[in-house]
Image (cartoon, rainbow, N blue to C red; front, side):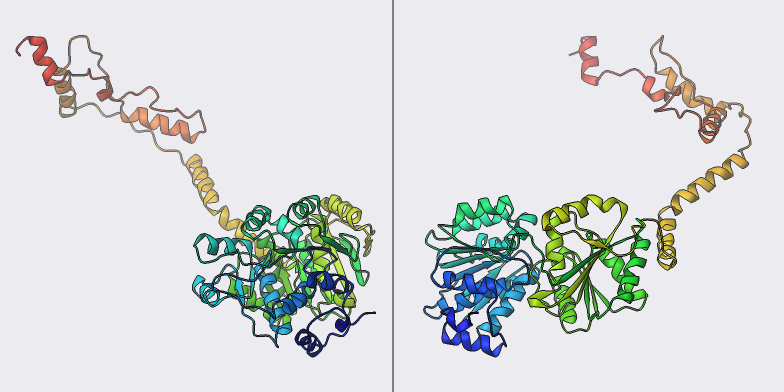
Length: 497
């Protein structure tokens, strides 16, 4: 077994690693670090939780000891798919680079541009960014990428899932041709392989475990549930209460709104829970994640924003409230537990409609997941608190419709009394006669409908009869008046001009 001192790292980096408490490198670190130090292009494939971040941060620190960054021209560039991963990599540089005087700049969304520009103006030795914010700075003319010596794409398969591949292709075209490129990923789909073939030059492929494999230290289980949301929430609470040696847990949901709903339900039942999803502002996301790391929050309900690369070594359990629609996401989710050789437990709640997702996961990982108890997909929820909580929401949505239906039923029970037509008075007929006085001979005369006709139409509508579209049989009198010629045309016709 090799030591860190056998990998060719500098003395400053070795001192920082020793102070951090690390003694032996992981297999991915043992194989990748020497190639990165030799400035070779590297394609690394390893399951999550094996120490891929240190595989490129440690050799980069050794390479950056010579030289100095210029304003707005970073020396190294690291792309991350999410803000949390970018912030975590920045923290790794703080820990491992404690003996270096390097400038590390973090470009992520949800943070002021002004603070980021200050660091760029001073010159960034290490630039850690998400693709969107990086391109924003470049398009504003605040960043030059022609001085990048080492380019790292971390969690490349997650970049593919989030639609960042076109942005990565554009960024690669902005970088110098002589750069060093490093790709790290837990899975290697065809699209990532094509991207690696396009932008990596004679790369060294480092693969310490089969692609899309799960750690053997993780115990995987499935449990059946009814399809209703409150059934799954009841099953989740029973799993948490019955779990052995649970110190903290991450609960994954497919949809952001379910994250908030499950978090409220757990808090209502006395659990210490926090929510984490992409629609939260960056300050709230970092505060929730920090509280979970400090054990101030026991249960973290999250979307897939927390499924990739987050290094929280002490997570004992992972619960899939929803099975992921992509089998690769399952590998990343359960990889939040059982990290660095520790044991972990992953339990997924499955409904009858999830069979195709289970088959895809087992086909990808090559493992058969055992079931807890019998496969009973009927409703087993005895606690109706959550059901009652959802009823007022439905009643509010249908309140307007119910009011309309009650009004219609009242109209049926109490029909309007028919009003006798009033005899036309001379005063009401005078305007009609005045209008007819200006008509030409032969013009059709249309009488105004009386009130009785209007009431009959209203009663027909109340009885549910066919509703007349448009004006029906009634045409207003002003529409039947002949078009009068303009004054100029009338004079020409009389020959007066």
